[in-house]
Image (tube, rainbow, N blue to C red; front, side, top):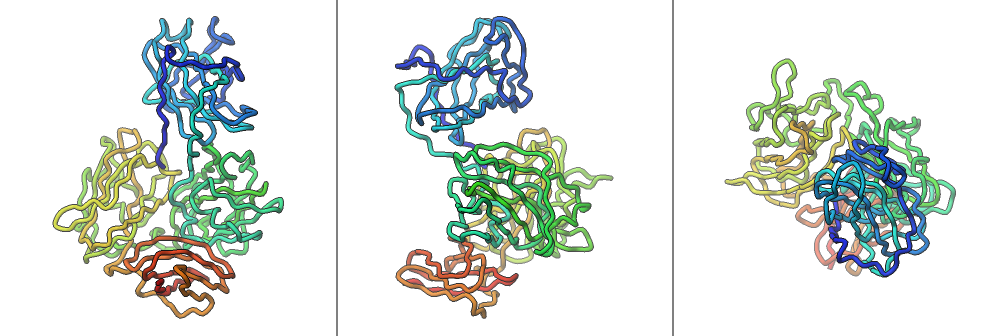
Amino acid sequence: MRSFLFLIFFSLCCVHSFSQEILYTLEAENADLTPPVKKKYVNGYSGNAYVGDNDPGSKLVFRNIDITEEGTYEFKTYYTSMHIRSIAIQSGNYPKVAVTMPTATEDWNRPPVAVMVTYIYLDKGSNTIVITPHNGGGPNIDKFEIVKTSVTIPRPEPLNVAFSYDLTDDALVTSNRTIVGINNVTDNNTSTVYTFSESSAEIKIECDMPYLLTSYLFSAGNGSTSDVKNWKIEYSVDGNSYLLVSPTNTDDLPDAIIFHIGRTPHSDKSKAAKYYRITAYDGKIGEIQLFGIPYLPNTNNKNFPVDMTEGMNISQKTLGDPLGVSGSFDERYYNLFDRDMSRKYYWHSATSFWVDVELENLSKLNYYTLTSCQDYPERDPKSWVLEGFDRDWVILDEVSDFIFPSRYATMKFFIEDEKLYKGYRLRVTQNNGADAFQLLKWQLFGSTNTSSLSSLDTDNKSIMVYSLQKKIVIDSEDKAKCYIFNLSGHLIATYNIHMGIYEFPVESGIYIVKFIASGKSYAEKVIVR
């Protein structure tokens, strides 16, 4: 997930607020603190206390800041610091605002304090404000003040904290309530909302294969005050008998919560499931996302699906650097391709690496997946390049500042290039901050044909597809997951459909409409004039 930041820098001499009515004084020591920041008691500070050790990873959170009028507010930070430092302030689900000290103070740990000022945007009603160090460590902080002002800034565009991919993207999603807006549940956008008038709604998710669930994200929508921790999630192996999922810990995001589930390689295989059921309350769902790893039934610990490297002699068809740890613990890069969740690629004294693989035939890559390991998120790949080989290496995908949602999370990345390549290379340029790196799996999915839909069964009469006035029309007697491709095989839209007639506006052209229903896949070609 990319991070967003508004950079607004002010010095005291050029900031003029037309009103100095203080609405809130927030003592830093009264915030919910995430270490390493900690309370320290010294006479002379407001409340005779401040927070220090404000190093990377620190967080100060103030909840239930009640505002009567939406708009711009002056935000003052009182601090001590002998070096120039910066902090970032996030209000609600708006992008962070960074502010830098205009001056240092005489001492780190005793008054007098100085003040830095910026502006933030607050919603009417309850607000949450999160303060973190920016670009390194932050200053020691005494208190904050929220002040009325005549200055106005435009309302920022709310952040979408949902991840760009999760397991529901390839799943069939249904509800026991209205089907209107059901796509908003799994469109990877917390600002689009599915509403229901009853006290609760049951959302059923049928995945494309069994997965071992390792985390999930719940959101009631941007600005909602609903407590999604009251929602319930269950899993089922057969689609009939469901068991409750119990998370081990949570991460708070703006307008969303990620719930983490501790898993152990292979010993938790009985919990791998294709069916999930969520019970939500309070009439609104912003987003449901599921994360985990594929866990296909097997007898040889190869739980990941077959990809384009299947059957190859990996030791002869791959190159990479560093090789990875060898010896009694085999953690070489060959493990990226073995489909076994208990084996990873690891090296202890590098922050970047590259691995390439030569395929048996020229192949078109539709997408690739990367899977995080069971521990140490600071070792995860953060920025990388995916390349294809055609006389020389050609960049097919570039990713920067990526954060995996959890441990054991398989994330999918689509490729739009239609060419066929003989080999592919993953070149990781940055990890997440450790002096070592690790990666569980790198898988490649595609075909030796320019269209990956040519072998699909099209003999199905429960769903009719035709064109009408620059629209693709689907008349369904069944529920299904629908994918619309252009003729070159590029995915342009994904929908959950139920019984009824659906219309999807498109430009003139030829399209392939693929369906997944009742465990089968099939496709239809449609000409839109």
